[in-house]
Length: 158
Image 1 (cartoon, rainbow, N blue to C red):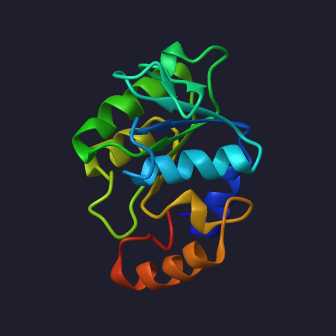
Image 2 (image 1 turned 135 degrees about the vertical axis):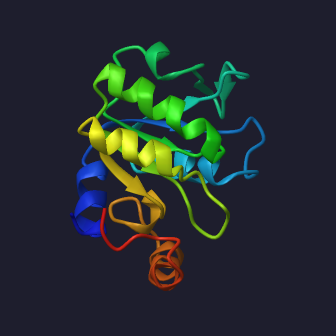
Image 3 (image 1 turned 180 degrees about the vertical axis):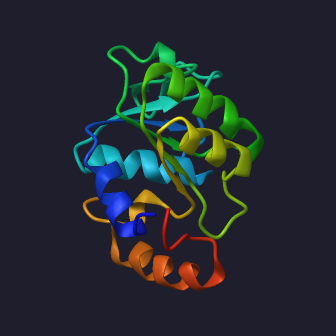
């Protein structure tokens, strides 16, 4: 097992990150906050939404395979039942870093998807939010991370 902070550091060392579940309605969803912050912090970020061609002025893609040049990592922000398909697609594409978003809401964590990813050699972070960790973090998210570790919504190890 790896400490969550170490896993987060590996994940956020990626330069090209896909975010699933980004909505065309800004501010409506945790994925949008993650997407916007990663863009602000200088990452190449690719919103994945099969029902949109553009989000916040960025091209949107129907799936990971459609992203030109591929990605190093993916933040899953869809409903949990969609997570396994994304993890399988990522594994097929050689994407080794997966973060299933979960903060105060039900989140995107799927036990089946976590198991599949780890069996296929992926680093899978099953909960929490990239915005809780540097270089993507802010004070409010860091505080929330500490609180949520006690509730089990954020894992201590992955």
